[in-house]
Image (cartoon, rainbow, N blue to C red; front, side):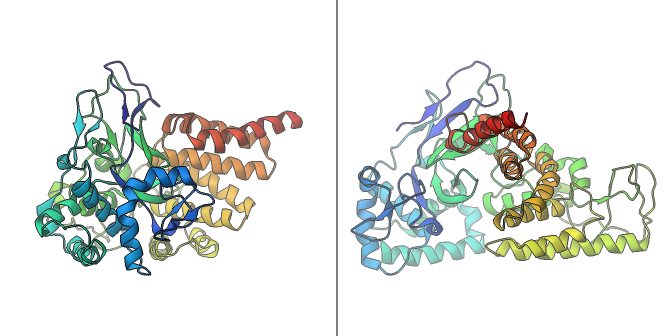
Amino acid sequence: MKNKYRNTDSIIKAGDLILTEQPFAFVLTSKEKGNRCDNCLEKGKVLKCSGCQFVHYCGRSCQKDAWNDHKWECANLKRVAPKVIPDAARMLAKIINRLARGDGHSHRAFYSATSFRMWKDLMSHYSDLKADKKRMDHFSTLCVVLFEFLKDISLPNTVELMGIYGRMVINSFTILDTDMNSIGTGIYLASSVVDHSCDPNAVATFDGKTINIRALKDLPCLDWDQIRISYIDLMNTPYERQTELLDNYYFLCQCERCMDDVQIRTVHAAKCLNVQCGNTVNIPWKKNCRLVRKPAMDSETEPVDTNDVIRCSECGTKYGEKHVEEFVRAMEITEQHLRDMKDASVAYVDICQYCLERQTSLHPLNVLRAQTLDHALDALVLVRLWESAQEIAEQLLPCFQYYYGDRHPLLGILHLKYGKILLYKMEVQKALKQFQCAEKIIKITHGDRHPLYREHLMPIMRQAMVESTHFN
């Protein structure tokens, strides 16, 4: 299937599909091995390839469609079995194979009638890679695997191979399922033309392995130089977002959202002790805690005088030593437990509850509190504690709206999830309201033909509508 693109000078409306593209190369994550088809990435009953016994397909059609890409890999996977090839090595091998044997060097991925991207157009960041010890160690490890895995292909020299590796790691997209969970990695040449912003005007979503880029805002025309998506999770401090982008993409983001003083004051804020105020109060809670990277701050960290009397800038309410200690302790406990849960496969209800009980001094939009609520909701839904899940979802919604914006897939999915909780509790009218909020967002971010909209949202929304008539 060829790329489909919007080629017009007319006004772009929020929700308009501006680019649809198939991957130049892709790989299903090993965590989904045996659960999803290695070709269409659909979840369901799959059967092993009779040759390599490693990849799986949902049917003969997908197996046939994938054969040109898989036939060289099949023999190599069979030869090295039972060794498991890491996902990054498989991806790199697929790219090398397409460049060596197929149309990799000549393939053109169009994003307009006259504009296209080729493999050579992708930036490799060669000099940045050479200075990046972590990635150079990763590259060296992959080279060892490739020399054993690709016996039938003459590998490029080290410089060329590093260029291929650089283009892969810098330009890869994480392929997401309908719940926005990672299920694979893909290279999309045309889509790689889109730059990053922490306040994006477009969004990339996936239908299987197909990437769809849609406008999130009304635009006067389609100017690809002005289209921005987010490369990262936005529910972090500006400093954490900037650091992730610098580490992974080698650029310092200084978009308006990163430099916004209001967000900088909010992300680690305490709430005002005056319940009528609602203002953010900034309390130093750990040494050299930086919330944003600014050019003037790169060489030194501005000292904070912890001896200053802390007052609310809005109403003047004073913070005593006890209140400061309570806030500092809550932040320290939360940071530690969030770090521990990040390394775990699931969030824990008791840990989240422990943190939340100690977060009474945190501002409702404090990012550590928001992240705790996010973990807590997932954990509570997993163990089917619907009453508690409802309370958490209610508190989480304004956090998602603040950090992700009013039109983001994760906000739409949260409304959908919250609606399901309410429907389970038979609070039908409230559930219907959440489904309607989800419908407005998902129609823009995914479109009304996407499985998330057609197969997940609309059936349960119709169910809520039917049940609401019974209760009226």
